Structures are given as structure tokens and as C-alpha cells.
Image (cartoon, rainbow, N blue to C red; front, side, top):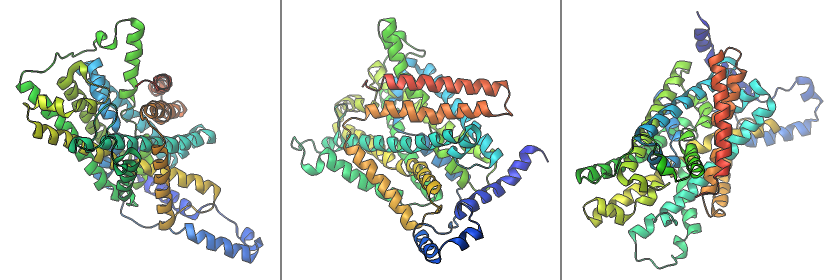
Length: 481
């Protein structure tokens, strides 16, 4: 039996050993227990029972559930910027970039899985800490917690914009009820709407297993598909009327400005849109732990299927949006999705245009709500791991689990209502935490892989350089809207 078969056969044992050690917590010798005062030991056991209980038995996720959950983790608000990226890169150029980044992301995830399967370390932080040193493991954990929280704050802000509108596009509520007074009643103003949105998100966080999250992820993918289908319908309507704009198949230098410096700046501005579109690395290890009958091949099939599905969605979104609005497409395609503009495309049929725009925005709002469970999952897991490093308790009781879940949601809500614009969040989160998880840490793992040859080392250096470039560009363009 070769080495791969050995690892596949031993993997369930490694996972079982990890689960047992996690549930038991740090070992304590019998001498230490006997030396402790009886009253103190009893008090400790009582306190421990409040937050800790044996790990529950549950049905693990199927290959389909894992694929759908990973697809949900990848798909985010970044897809709304794809048409603008395609306007600069051209249809073929945009498709080539999406395909290249998808392949690069697939192989970077495989890089994460190699040391996981070799060492039995089942969290991203544990793998990087084992391979690169404990300090880097702490950095990974901090990146996951801050990055996931930042993405959720961003989703909540965009959700509020979709409902009440922003300076870039009108909201669902003003579209449906144009006669509302200005300013809006208190229960429809931004803070109140964010409150209602947070309450709408809360039920989606109830599932305690990734198998329970899978139906939510499937609904999220369906809502995303409705948004893409809507763009394709508009594209077909423009084609039937013979009104499609001039299409650039390859990058158009004139799109980025006149001077060389302006072109370089604008071109670099769209790089993070494509390069960070597939970031999902923080969700990989929770899915690894939960996949039934885990083998390296089954996990790679799930990753490849998710990359293919999201790559197709990104291509269709980017190409269709570019074909409908041409070089006039905005950085957020929802800004082009106005009732007047869609009415003009749909043969002047106002009720149809209103229904169309509302359907798109409601589908996008629902997709953001349904993104919360899979995005919050790795953040919560790393918070639990951090607490486990400080306390003996490793397995939370249901009560403590849900307290942590909804306390996290409350903190995310409080941050969201204190931030007036999401654009700086996009640049900073994507440039620092997102690129660290997707490029810098996988690149470090590639360079530390003793079994990797020169191609793997070269790929690792490429990931590191890409991560550094994206960090610099993201920080430099964070203030640009």
C-alpha cells in the first residue's frame, strides 16, 4: 500500500484522535487532582459543567453539502464588481483572469490540505503554527476572527443599503413605495433598518452543524443564480433590440484613463476585485472536519466543483453586466439597476421593470443574509479555540454555544451602525486579512513543504508576492470610491 493509501486509511483515526483530545482538554495527572483541595476541585467541576459537555454525535456532511457550503463561502458581494472588471479587461481577458485566479485558489487550498493530511492538524491556525511556528498560528487565528467579522459587518452595511438605498443606488423600500416622506419615518431609517436586518439574520445562525447549514447555502446559491439570470435576461433583451454596446474582447487601455500614471492606478484598482473573489480559505478546515468518509480525493473534488461553479457565476455576471451597460457600468452593478434604466431596456414596461429590479435586489439581500452562517462559522470556531487555550473547557454546551453566536452577531451589528460607508471596509479587509489567508499563509506553507519540489517553491513565492502586492494596492485604494 502506497503513502497516499496509508494516509487515507489513517485519516479517520487522526480525526477521531483530534476530536477526543479536543473534548478532553489538557491532560491532568492524578497526583495534581489529589493535591488540589476537595472544595476547589468540586467548584471547578461545577463551573466546568456549565460551559462544557461531551461532544455530541451528529451526521457529518455529504460531499454535496460540503461543495454547496464552500460555494456559499466563496460567493460574496465582490461579484457585483465583476462587470466593471470585465469592462476594463475585456470579455476574454476577464474570463482568463477569473479562470487563472480560480486555479490558483484551488492549488493554494490543496497546499493547505497537504500538511493537514500529513500531520492531522485540523484547523488552519494549527497547521500554520505547526509548520511555521506558534506565532504564525496566532496570526492566522487573528486574521480569521477579524476578517470574518469584517466581512459580516460589510454584508450588514450592504444589506442596509439594499433596503433603504445609498448615494450609489436606490433601495428596495423607496422603489416599492416612492411616495414615502423625506426624511423617512424612524422605523425605516438606516439604524432601524439595520436592526430589522440583524433580526432577520438571527434565525439563519441557529443550525449547530454544517450539515444543517447546507440547505441555507443551497438557497443562497439559488438567490445568486437569480441575480445572474436577471443580468442574462437584460443582455438578451438588448441583443434582440440590436442595442448591445461595442464589446472589447481584450483589455482596453483607453478605459483606464489618458496618462500612463492614471491608467496604471485605475488598472491596479480592479486587480483586488478579481484576485480576492475566491477567498474562502478560512472555511476549508471546518468543512474538512465535517466531511463524511474523508479522503484527500473527496475534498479535492468538493474544492474543484466549488471553484468551477463560482468561476462560471463570476464569468456570467461580469460578461452580462458589461454587455448590457458597456463602459458605463459602475463599480457596483446595482448602481446601474435603476427602474428608469431597466424600463428603457424592457421596451418601456414600467411595472415589469419595477418587478425586475425588486427581484434582483431582494435576491441579493437574501443572499447576503444567507451568507452569515458559513462566514460566522470559522470565526466562532477560532474564538472557541482561543478560549480553549486559556481554559480547560473545549466543548461548549448548547447554551454557551448560542450565547457566543448571538453575542458575536450583536457586536457585528454595533460596528455596522457606527460605520457610514462600506467602501473603506472593502479595501482594508480584502487587502489585509483576505490576502493573508488566501495568499500569504498558503505561500508560507508551500515554502515550508519539505516534500515539494522547485515548482511548488516557485508557486509559494508567487503567492507571497501576489499577497504583498494586493495588500499594498488595497491599502492605497481603500479611500477611493
